[in-house]
Length: 491
Image (cartoon, rainbow, N blue to C red; front, side, top):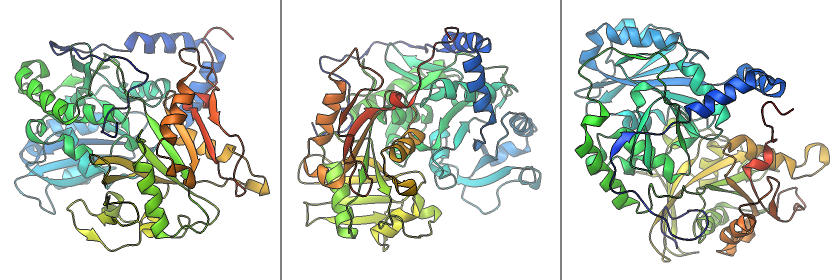
């Protein structure tokens, strides 16, 4: 099917628990604790954790408050508890809601705090998902870790340390302290106020669609649905790690059952296969454009990628060998979250860059994409003559396939391993002309999945050879191929 959100692994029936009830979600806390405990006495795991601890990560915090709340001393307590976290936050973004947008919306004591950045919002932008939408243009590095929180809790000093460790252990997942769910499959939905950590690359402007109708004020659920649709798992540790509530008038999730159910129904109407018994399978397509590609052929390549019967969750164009994506270009914050609108038939349709407000941008396609090279991806909206409209994320990544004049597949593989962390993610590398076959992605995924449930971590399909310029011609494997198996305590 060419419909959205139908990328479930394998074949057969799926089901959904429509009876509930709303309940505290299952957690991976025991598994996390067991790994940390066993790993403490295992040299290989201990070395790995020390390596993680030495990484120079970019970690930022983001919370939302209201202008009238800034007169309350509790906000200062919240900020102070964030500044005590380790690793240190590079930035603490404080989004201040006011009746109308204004240039200065916070007292001087807040903006003078080291590392604190104040962002003014309108009063209607309420909730963590609205906060994220405004954060997208401020943070554009895909590897940035974003810690979402609120203005109502004093955060335990070890909270961030545990969430970051869990993000390393459960690679490629978003990590929450505490969460809730609807029945067996309706979640987990993180309680953002108690701390939620995710990579910036997990979020794009398609989140805005989730924030419609009855979900406008249910940002936690909208965000959880957005992540599931992208094939990103949410893991809950089941522990607040010393976090304490400062305000008593915060409405807990278990008292909002009717509101939550209304929002859930709305999201299921948008995505009928959301929160079912099988988790969506994430697939990322890496495309090596052809030599001599111009803007027209570049747009055609993107269109063919989006018309695949199994639509990729993300398409990554490879900038290499001085192709048109390697040229020097200056990016801008507004264009970093612009969207690409593709409409009409192949060869005769339109390819238009639009801002978030819908205005057309007169910039060459290759220049715009070169400007977001090695940054977070942008959303492509595809409306063709071959079925319902679709959307996917488009990114550009730099690769040098022939270091020292010796071409190999390793530079491309290492770049993909750096970008994608979830072991189950399928990585498909293709030369642009392969995409003329609209079933090439589906056929390669069928091939890599044919061995289930006894697949080797090193299973692959396609060709190990490269093009003459070093680009991979046709190769599919799973991200787990880039990991080394090790069981703590067993050498």
